[in-house]
Amino acid sequence: MADEIVIAVDGPSGVGKSTVSRGVARHFRLGHLDTGALYRAATLAVLESGVDRDDAEAVTEVVRGIDLDQADGETRLNGADVSRAIRSEAVTSAVSEVSAIEEVRHVLVEMQRRWVFEHGNRAVVEGRDIGSVVFPDADLKVYLTADPDERARRRSGEAGTDHGTTRAAIERRDAFDSTRAVSPLTVAEGAVVIDTTHLTLPEVVDLVIAEASLV
Image 1 (cartoon, helix red, strand yellow):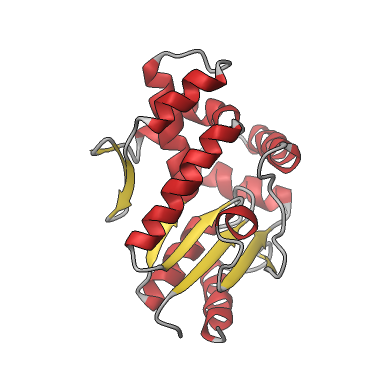
Image 2: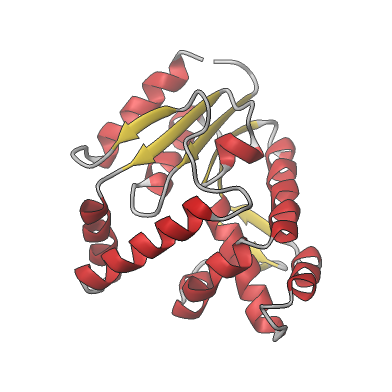
């Protein structure tokens, strides 16, 4: 493996991106960046600021003024661990709206690129636009997918929520993310597509490790 390597892992919610990305990063001793958590932390900052979420300029100014970082499994907003706070229902309900603002994405993409640079350009980065926008020249691009029903089963099991409600929420998020004007969820050119529906997460980790070993 090269001294510098960036592995991009994309896909919708419920496909195992975080578990797989952490496993691959641990195997190769690479940094791990969960960009979805950064968007959630930015959304938390916006909610706490009280600005009107329909005011794109005001929202962007809030995001420009915050300090985001990930270290030791924690997502930190202005130095405080917000790993639990960003999973609140309020943040979950607002994150797609905030994430769809073009300038917000520009700010966070630069943060993501800077984080990887500061970690020696050795990282597994997960999200929805990593291989297509953030790191289009990533050494390995992986797109994880799964049947919506299976994704809902996984998510409802984790959160203790109703399966049907969870599936409906997943389908709404998929439709929003795949059709938004800025950085839509898509399979990046050259990405290895892995359907995780009938695979265990350790099996998916092994598949990605095998692909990365060829880089």
